[in-house]
Image 1 (cartoon, one colour):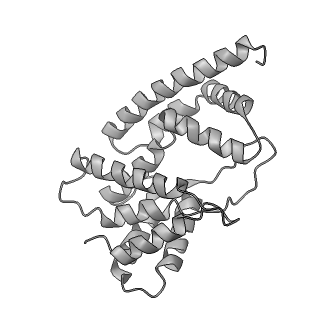
Image 2 (cartoon, helix red, strand yellow; image 1 turned 30 degrees about the horizontal axis):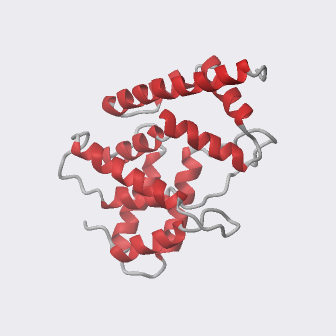
Length: 216
């Protein structure tokens, strides 16, 4: 089904507010557009049938970027954690609110069904599997490292906490577990592995600089 122009406009308007303090910016909309572009790119690589309708997946990508509230507040110096299930459920609820009484019920229903599936261990549809992989890819690579730094900075942390987080993830085998269990398509898993190696190089440079300074 075609992407509904009015629904997209409403979502873009909502994404212009990046937090619950009313701060305006492009961060959330930029991220949503990147997710949508990634969806289209992976469809073009035939991870799912080429004729797959991407409208609901693109709306889901936008809904998943709506400013959500962490269920549990972060401890000082710690990064707030929101599970994929919490994020998807909030996105579905907020999407319904943003859609309001506009005439796009079928697309909203299809999108909420995707969001219901996306956090499941084995989603029922290939569309939901691809959407889950697209979201998991966001944590990998240099972009994922920068996103982590942005999140920590918003919570009052800084470079030291970024480096500490990188080291602890390696020590605990966090990334190996994510690679094993976080993807439904081998092609996205390979892409994540490539991006992880790039992020590891960047993290190693950061740790080396801080060690040289005597900070670590």
